[in-house]
Structures are given as C-alpha cells and as structure tokens.
Length: 206
Image (cartoon, rainbow, N blue to C red; front, side, top):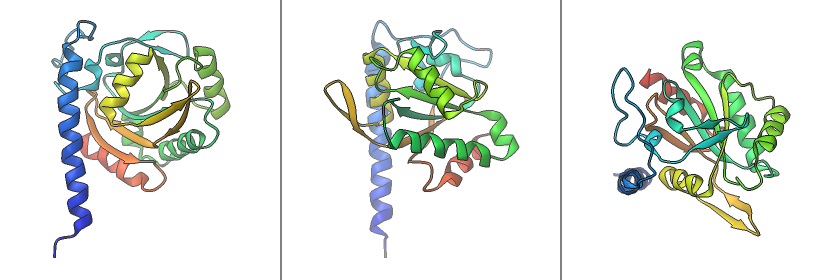
C-alpha cells in the first residue's frame, strides 16, 4: 500500500521546485539583478540564489552581494533580532549543529542569518546580536538588506512571515542548505528535529 504521507511530501517537493524555478526567472530578468563576474570554474547555475539582485549589508557595515558567499556550503535562516523565542531557539540549534558536524563537513560549511526586519536590524543591532549569542565571524555571516531584497529572498526560499505595526509577528523556522554555488540542496523546518539530515545533505555534496 502506498504511504499517503510519502505522496504528500513528494508533491510538496515538486511544487516547491516548480515555484522556485518560476519565480527565479523573472527576478533575474530585472535590470537591477546581479550578474557576478564568472569565477574560474564557470558561471553560476541558473537556479543559484547568488544571482539574486540587490546588495546586502553585514553587521560590519560592509556591502555584500550574495555571490560573495560562493565557495562554502551555507546553512541559512531568516530571523529578526527582536524575536523573543523562535529565533533565539533556532540560532542555538544551529550552534549545536555546528558543534556536531564532522571535521570535513564543518570545514566546508558556514552559517548565514538574514534579518526580515531590516528597518530595525541595523548593523549595530546585528553586531549586538552576534555578541549576545557568541557567533564567531569566521563561520557566521549576519546580513540585512533593503526590504525588496529581503522579500525576494524570502519568496525564493519559500519562507513565509507576517508583520504587524512594522514588526514581524509570526514566521516559520525554515532552514535552508545551499551548496558552494548557492543552489538549494536541502530544506527543513527547524534544526533540532533532525540535525543529521542537514549534515548528511552537505556530506553527500562534498
């Protein structure tokens, strides 16, 4: 007998892939879209999130195009620093994941937090968040972007959130793994439920 849960998961996966592809083409067609210089080993893949237009800003106040993250696997989550519970829990889970990674996986992996509250989350606010949670600069990138850039990234990831009075009120705990060229190779809700899936996805792609 066919497991209906398996069918639902398969259908959701197909739907997500189609939506990402359908959305990525018009986004990349905008005049402001980023077209990074070719790297030594070739152009970015058509479905790379690193082709997304718009500059982001680090907590060191440095402008950064997502293509600048090319070369490492990225474990990506969208958060906001005023979040009282979900985001701190997610960050702690990501830190536990970092500690649990085998040496080979850890060496190839970085962690990225992107704010969905750019009006409040200035570089100063992100620096304070980094300090509060003990996020080292070697392996953790904290970013803010213009609202349109954040919305585009959220849509491409299938990340949903609601706002009220200018403050994000509810959002998912979606965690995304990007390969070295910024393509989505794995997604799951939260880390704590099954961190081994994230490690396995990276290990397979090494």
